[in-house]
Length: 164
Ligand code: PNS
Image 1: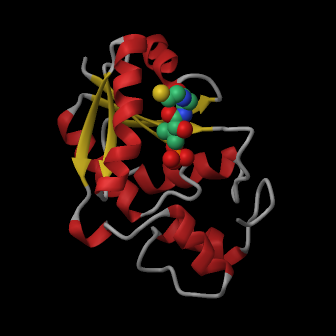
Image 2: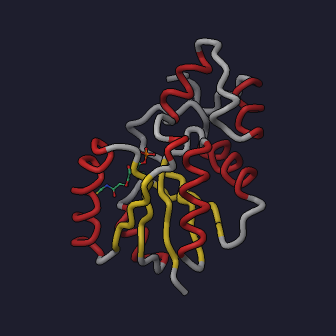
Image 3: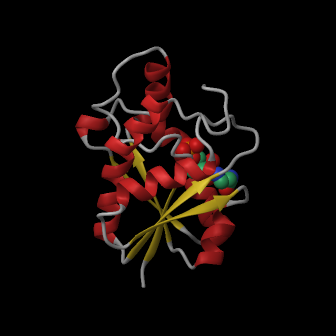
């Protein structure tokens, strides 16, 4: 069984994430969408909300499971879960510059490979940070997030608080 992980905060999950996860599901037998918790970070949505949104929006796809990643090393998580590849979407050369040292480090730490998928052109400008900023300032984010995420944004669910 070839198992990969798509790790991230998913605060919230957006259409660019979904596209990369769906493509990863076509390459591997199982894809774990691992939702991270970093206690140094302020999230708009709680871990439970971020996982619920991911589960709701990925429910129709086969071979994908959503689970918490915890706050430890991704390399350790992969070793523990028998995961051989980390899949990341790349939107730009600055994404690549940020990701390359982590990919090399993760391979050194646990042998896990990182597979980069170029983001689809339509999603190059999407980020959870921008989507949160636009929504907090009253802008329309319906083109960028799945319907269940939009519902939660419009309902003003704030989970762990502080809208960032
Ligand atoms: O969506 P994000 O916030 O950009 O996701 C970042 C994530 C979770 C992929 C990254 O922070 C991560 O890999 N965290 C695990 C901690 C770790 O392993 N750090 C060492 C990296 S070499």
